[in-house]
Length: 204
Image 1 (cartoon, rainbow, N blue to C red):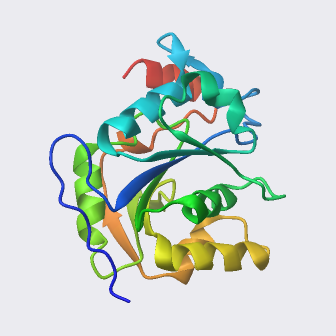
Image 2 (image 1 turned 90 degrees about the vertical axis):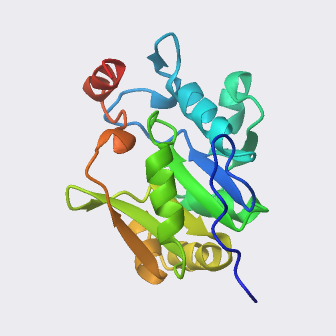
């Protein structure tokens, strides 16, 4: 079966066959509470992420263990329940890919308000040609929660990894043809693992 090519990119919405998958409601152990609900400039942090995704993607999926917690500010995002017994980003990615009708998905964390960076998206979609996933590399570290995935290949690979007991998204990247995209600017990858992280984000 021929694979869909990367979409034509233009100002405004990224055209089909793409979607955005936003992962929310993780354990937030270092933050101390659900960081998706932490306020940034008077709004939940997750609301900023969803709004940024909605400006670039016609279809936005919000994946969480309890997605109804975020319904009051989710806009037109589709609420998807992650039913996996383990709490891991890989399970969230799999849950989103399983219900997506798009061939290509951009995945990001619900605590990453700068992830939807137009230049980064351009580079990731360009790098996806001939690959199953494209992931940024910043400071020598892969950023699987700010990456693009082809559903046809990555969904069964994620399912297999979870079945084998793997919980990290790096396992998915190792199992498919992954393009690594060096990216010097750390801003798209900033997240709120701690309250100090959130305070830093608020200054940008």
